[in-house]
Length: 245
Ligand SMILES: Nc1ncnc2c1ncn2[C@@H]1O[C@H](COP(=O)(O)OP(=O)(O)OP(=O)(O)O)[C@@H](O)[C@H]1O
Image (tube, rainbow, N blue to C red):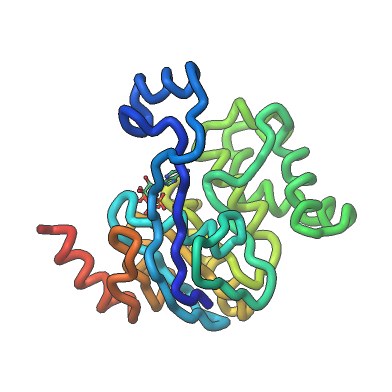
């Protein structure tokens, strides 16, 4: 449950805009003290999510979807307001921390342990994770370092590690968009399963189709504000009108 949540990023060395060459240079040259710029990424957002719900987060680029997801996962502090979760939230996204220099197998092991599985459980489930991810479809990649993977393969492995476990609150950031069609089908089926096992699923995606196929409820964010919260079909109808402007 989120209650009047505000999230603000504090940016140092913001002169010249984020990501510009001058900004990068000025970051190297000097450290900016307090009083750097602030980005108010989420504004006064409130909603209650129930067990068994799959909720899609939609909105244009920079509207605050990933920020809200990270805050629900407990990875970002809120400026004001509160977020309560019943159970342990797990963020499974494109940024999940896997080690590039370690093999897929080793990452599966570490990821499994990090999620609280026992060594024996991890050993037992490892082949299933490899199979689900499909990383071995083009040769034995599980025994190669992650840096030899394409970005799609890496994203699939991340999703597969996280998806092997049942989660109380599962947060998915764009993971579905990176896989190919057959992987997308498998992961959508798995999300449906997780939902049936009474967890809550949040999905951030730019694909209206995956939102429609996986979520019965959608939250639409724009400029950090919650524009609409309701049945996916209704929210998407309004959002699509808005995007077509
Ligand atoms: N680490 C950061 N530091 C400062 N500002 C940030 C940071 N991350 C995101 N922002 C800003 O916060 C706002 C919301 O970003 P966020 O990534 O949550 O949007 P999003 O809806 O997930 O976007 P997208 O659809 O492009 O993935 C944007 O204005 C963005 O520039």
